[in-house]
Image 1 (tube, rainbow, N blue to C red):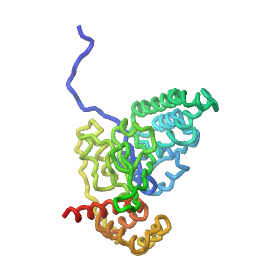
Image 2: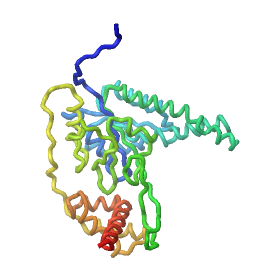
Image 3: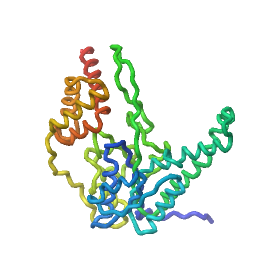
Image 4: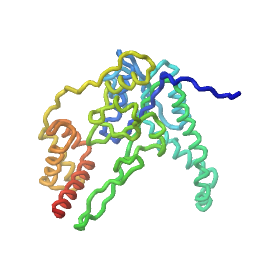
Length: 340
């Protein structure tokens, strides 16, 4: 007689773990807060675990949440303790901002590996090279336990990651230098979440946000059953949280519908252009006319409704990224002209 038995598949309540990665100005904290508000609904509170020097409190007047700050050492064990405490305190939705510290922060996995290497080899550089991989055994084991704890917690968890932009200067066919993004592990040019490289794929879903398109998700991992809940052409918001919460519930109540954003944006302002021109001159040495060409190109080629205030903010927060895209577009136009 077999010890195994098959039964009809029935939808059960599931807990979602959502990752939101982005650099400064990409809207990752705001997006996490909006998603969490949609998950809890009806004005209920969610819990926020803050490793960013109490930065989550900047949103205290906008969202209904309770706050817990943790400081160094940012070890996997301390993260696990904070998340378990949040669940035991009654929060069914937990925001962690940011999860990057457990990897690269003070006392995180990189520091743990260095401490192990120091213990095993000291300052003997030849021995250190031989022990480098062995020194990863303990920190990676602790990190794995943390991920397993996330999967066990009966709560929805929204995790923020910092992201860094990888760029390099290369010569084009005319001998001029231009900024080119390196391809990342996510398959999204130029941006890499600061975390253990497999973490974004261990979560239920994960997204990258960029400064030139604040809040608008680019999927790192997004499975078919979740695609209807996430509008990839609009910022992550409360409605996405409601839809994901409804999908995660086994309840047969009517699912909420996607609500279009009817809010009109203010127009692009001269003061925004002035900030961009000043930045481009000091950081890249561009003339005013060169910067204006980039601005006009972006205002005609963006996802913020054209000449809008949002487009201006994207230029201010993400000009380096936009400038790289502009250079690429100009090269493609030139190549097409030559082929014609």
